[in-house]
Length: 96
Ligand SMILES: *[C@@H]1O[C@H](CO)[C@@H](O)[C@H](O)[C@H]1NC(C)=O
Image 1: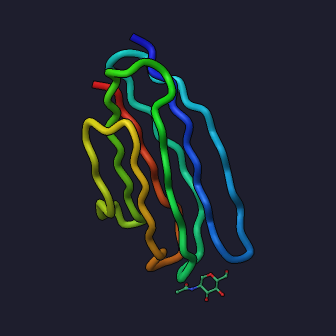
Image 2 (image 1 turned 120 degrees about the vertical axis):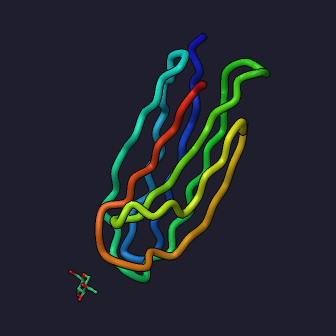
C-alpha cells in the first residue's frame, strides 16, 4: 500500500516553511535533513492524506542522534521544539 502524507516544517525566525508531500510505499522509510540553528523554534506537522487506515511512524533526531520525538501509528501529529544546538536535524517517516 502506498501512503501519501503531507509534511509541514516550520522553522521560525529568519526562517523557512517547507511543505513536502511524501510517498511512502509499504514498509518504506524516508528521512530528510534540515540544518537548524541553535535557539530556533520549529514545528513539525504531518497529516496522512490517503486512505483511512494508514498509520505512519515519525522520528526526530538532533545532530547528536538523540531522539527528540517519536510517534508510532499516527495519522496526524504535530510537534514543536527549540533547537538546542547548531546542526543537522533528521526527520524520518516510516510506513510499517
Ligand atoms: C551557531 O551558529 C551561529 C551562526 O553560524 C553562530 O553565530 C553561533 O555561534 C553558533 N553556536 C554554536 C553554539 O556553535
